Length: 220
Image 1 (cartoon, rainbow, N blue to C red):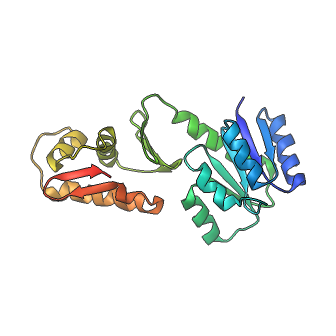
Image 2: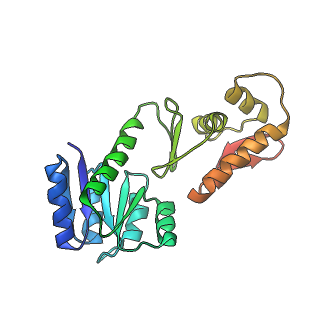
Image 3: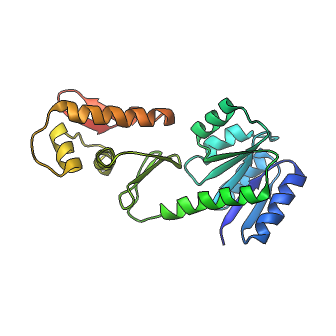
């Protein structure tokens, strides 16, 4: 049975979610403040976290940074401004649902997040800081959030993450990502590295890829 931590200071909302999810075969734990939620998180393992923003003690915004990359987080909030949603999703939240919400919609969103974590659970997953790469599915996550890369972009990241301290020449990167030993122009790899960095920029991890002048690329 999958476990869910509900961090919501409104007892009516908290109890309503708790009862509904229990009826749908989820093991739920309740917390009514940010401090209690953080303590519960330290003591137990949870497959998913439902997080209110306006909490006594630690705020939801503070807790997102604590939870990021350690399981999906769905924010529950009365704030429906676009800027607020974008900021929270960029900070590490996986989904955002505005109050008042329908319990059936909440359940579907929970199921979507839990399915995505299940498909990504593999012994072959490569980890580097906030990055997780699954070579089997060619998926990459940063702090738990999916980022889409092309086949060649993913292969470049895979090579760098397998040997994070090693400097790779552009030729070696090309041979690994394209499976071809034909000599290529420098700009081919430069363009792909630039595209990768652009896609990582929102996560704040684009600087992990370092240019070693006169040699190639490595991870910081």
